[in-house]
Amino acid sequence: MKSFLKCLPLLLALLLTLTACGTRKTADNTSAATTTTNDTEDTRSLKEIYDAFIAKVDAEFPSLVETPVDGDNFSYYFGITDSSVAESTFVSEPMMGAIPFGISMLRVKDGVDAAKIAAEMEAGIDPRRWVCVTASYVETAVKGNVILLVLDNDDARGAAIVEAFRAQ
Image 1 (tube, helix red, strand yellow):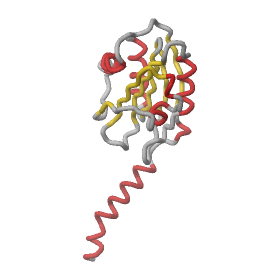
Image 2: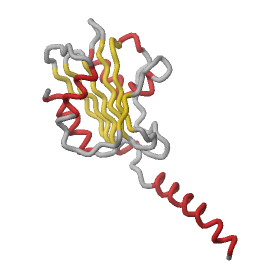
Image 3: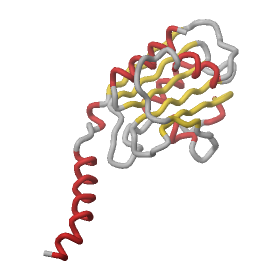
Image 4: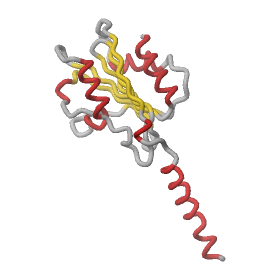
């Protein structure tokens, strides 16, 4: 009985881990829709654009941090390998890595077709990039030369983020 009691915390931890991995939606439930708005180009930094639209979203967010993007992680955050199309990037994601949520923004260089790049991003992004969890909401939106990519496990929050981006 004593050995069973000693193992009980490990068994509970294993059970919680297996339950967490088994209750998330699969990639088949991912919704994908690219929206394009051909408004004039926004000259603010991507961080300034992000701060402006995220403040208008009436939803609860996990603790988010800005994540640096480099050549090694560019495709992880944007779903494409050609980083030469990017003039600038911005990524906001949870501090904890097992929460299926991420906002990636990319400003394309002059002459680059933002709608085409957005479609490539949406097709190439992995909504299962987190351990044991999957984003059920995947959507890109284009406004001028800025592309927004949202991955979320809360469809309503994801849609609210995209709508706030479009409305600014």
